[in-house]
Every structure is written in structure tokens, then in C-alpha cells.
Length: 101
Image (cartoon, rainbow, N blue to C red; front, side, top):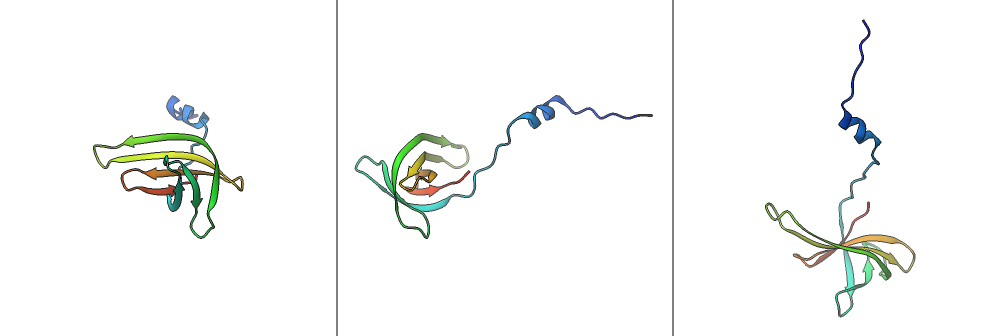
């Protein structure tokens, strides 16, 4: 007797969606800011400092107050060599990180 397998609709829909890639582990970086707190230079681990020429996007996340408070400003920046980075400023610890997607 032939047997067929039915795949539930939610699984079929999930397969049709674009794959979302998780972000990697953030790495600590040194960021120099101007008098308004806007980042102007970033130094990645083991690299010389690069000038930030453009801030493409900026957003803030304040979340998880019920477990561990997170308060971060994220920025997508373009460096003077054309490289694009995602930086975030941990507002609670006053530390900067780079995170690649």
C-alpha cells in the first residue's frame, strides 16, 4: 500500500523564507568619538585605527529587563577603506564591539 507523508503548512512556509544567518560573537574594539558622542575612528583587534566616513544606519535596543538588562546603540558604518562594519555601544558598560553578520 503506498504511503505518503504530509508536511504541515508552517514547515513548508519556513522553507520558502530566506535563510537568516545568526550574528557572530562580538569582539571588543576601541572607538574614538567626537564631542557629541558620534564615533569618528575605530580600531579592530590587531589593526590600525580607521576613520569612520559614513554612518549608514543607527538603531537602539533596550531589552530583556526581566533577565539581564541590555541597552545598546547599534551602527552600520563605512570606514575610509570602504569596509562596512556593524558596531554597537554597550551603554551599561560603556564598551564598544564589532559584530559581523
